[in-house]
Length: 72
Image 1 (tube, rainbow, N blue to C red):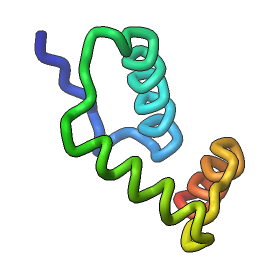
Image 2 (cartoon, helix red, strand yellow):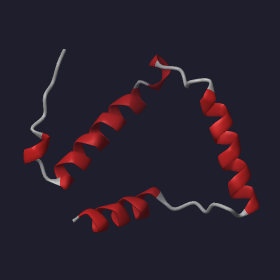
Image 3 (tube, rainbow, N blue to C red):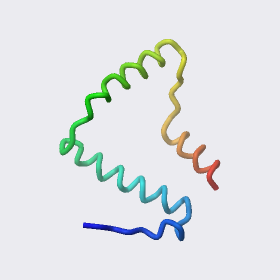
Image 4 (cartoon, rainbow, N blue to C red):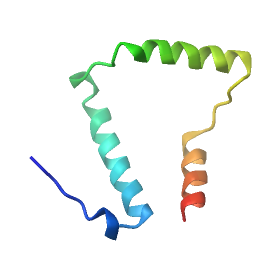
């Protein structure tokens, strides 16, 4: 199946909403796919950076709001 979206005519808010819907659908079917082999190494490095204080976590809702504020 091929789907074409009128991306040039869509607002940033519409694009983000569609991305969220796609992500939610993928998350509902997470057993249908396997993480790539390199993913474990990336997660280990991120855990290391967080424990060392090099990185901080931001609540997803807060982060989405910050992104939306920057894009609109």
